[in-house]
Structure formats: C-alpha cells, structure tokens
Length: 362
Figure 1 (spheres, one colour):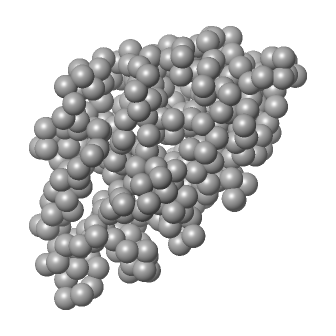
Figure 2 (figure 1 turned 180 degrees about the vertical axis):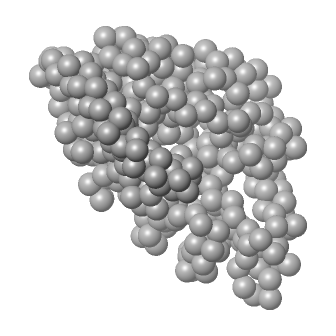
C-alpha cells in the first residue's frame, strides 16, 4: 500500500472511489478551486498539502482532503486544517488510519477540524486526543418543512407499507396546510430594508472589521475574499442568497442561504449557513429568520434546514416552532495542542459554529 500527497490530476480516480461509496464531490473546476482560490493557500505560495491518497497496485483506493481556513479569536489569527471527504474502498478499510495519521502530522496548524464527521470519524478524533463539540446545539438540526407529504414519502417504513401512506395522505396534507398557514401569517410583515446580494463586495470587509471588535467567539474570517472563496461553487451556480439588513446604507446584519438539494430523494433543500448581527441584536436575527422562511416558501423549497449556531440564536429560531432532527454523535470534532485554545473551545460561549465552518457546505 502506498500513501502519497494528492495531485490535481488525481481527480477522476478520486471520483471513482467517492461514487463507489455513495458520496458526492464537486465538479473538477470547483474542486481544484478549493485550493487554487484559497486566500491562505495563495499567500503561502501553494505550500499546503491538498490531502492524501492510498494506492494499491498504482490504483487509488482511498482519499482524504485537506484545506486551510483562517479563524479570528480575541484579536489573533489561527490556521485551521479542515478535513474533508475521508473515503476508502471497503476492501482496504484496514489502511484508513494511514490517511488520518498523515493529516494529524501536519506542522504549523493551530486547529484540526472536521464539521461533517460520521460516528467513526468522531471516534477517530477522540483516539488522537481530539474533542467532540457535544453541546446540544451541534447534535440537533432544526427543520422548517413546507412539503410534509414529499418528505414523509421518503421514510423507509412508508416505502415498505405504502397502504399506510395512502390512508394517511389526507391527514398529512391537512397538517401541512395548517403549518404553512402559520408560517404565512408569521412572516408576512417584514420591513423593506432588506437587500439581497449574489456575491460579497467591499461592504462585507467594512462589516467584518467592525464585527471583529465586538465578537469574542472563535470565528471563521468573514471578509470579502474569504467569503467569495468559501461560497465560490454556490455563487457560480446561482445557488446562494445573501440577505442583508442595512442602516444608513451600511450592513448591520446578514444571513446566508444556500441551495443544497437532496437529489437521491428528489427533495429541494435550502440551508441557513450563517447568521450574523453587528451588535448581536435579537431583533435583527428574528427578522432575518422570518425572511429566510418566507424566501424558502416563495422559491418552493421542500424544507429549510439549520445546523449549529449558539444557544441564543437557536432560542430565537425556535420561536417559529421548527421540527427537530437529532443525532447520536457530534459531527463537529477538533484537535489542538494549544492549551489556551483547548480551554477556550470547551466553553460553549466561545463557539458559534454553523455550516459555514469546515467543509459542511461542500
């Protein structure tokens, strides 16, 4: 078995492993742009390992992606190595640890982060003295469902017992009507100082510089350059809504929504991936959440999904009575040898992770 660093020319062979294991991957252009357009990667002149592959008889049988993100915390900048798409052919799973060992051996990294770890990945991080973010906010997704019929139709038990679904169909439709009517009443009155952007401009640099002075959380760097890099795929494919609230022509709060459909189940899904207010204003958050629900309904998405966010933001979101999807394990895992960061990241008050963190949007 041979372990080596990833090359961009490996893409087609990596795809074969990914698809064989029922996972997804960006198209080649978007995949290579994860590194080639990455502000930190460009700054250090490409001196960053894109990941590793396992080869058996010169055939790629495993892959582990790795890209950098910058985070700000209490006036200091930290380098985060993000794990993405850890996949190995079933026949060679015994060699999986070679990939994770290579990842953790990297130098000049402050935090190693995975935001989409499955149960196995979660245990692996612990085995390497890593930590899971086990606060309730990160083990429970919030869902605003607009098409209950279509969603329930995909439940395994419904697929097996179709006659039950046929009997319950009128009840489901009536229930769905009541819920959607509630959403309609709740979100119909929203002030008109909302502006929707298709990409990130200089206004976001101004916003971020002010935000840094007011925030004490471990935050992904949200200036124009980093945001355009992170949402590059969604901007190019018109799958993003950047909803801003402005005062005196300056952004005071914003949220980011991305279209992330479940093609296997033929479900249209919108995800709320960022929710920021300059002064942590609850009224701003409430208005943006209302607008997000309204937009998702207008654009005929089957549901709106919300992952993560701190307890205060989730408290506001829960005012609108979302459904809950609970997980047995934490998908947010990290490792750091920095004692200050280790202590800080164990305090929920310093965290406000969402799908903007790590590789969750990919």
